[in-house]
Image (cartoon, rainbow, N blue to C red; front, top):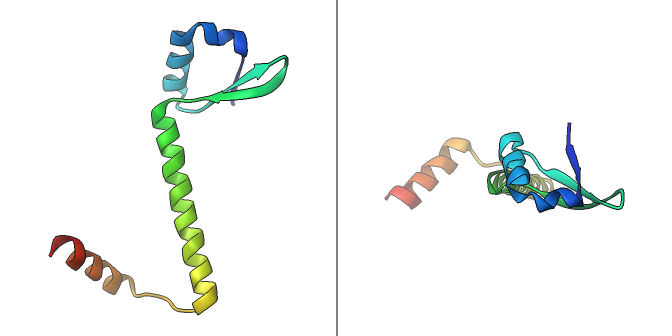
Length: 87
């Protein structure tokens, strides 16, 4: 369940920081009863970015397949990557 806190709680930065790290998910900050900010740990942010990048790469691959109808053999692709990066 998402953690929702009023903006006045930001005065206690240590508590907010501890919550962000303990819960490993964003904390939603409200101002006058309405959503205003989202606060999260760097680890949660980096995880979210990594997931978004993976999702974007999958979407790009699916679009390429729709356009070209061409698939690549996994063994050949991995072998090419090994040759490229490991000589």
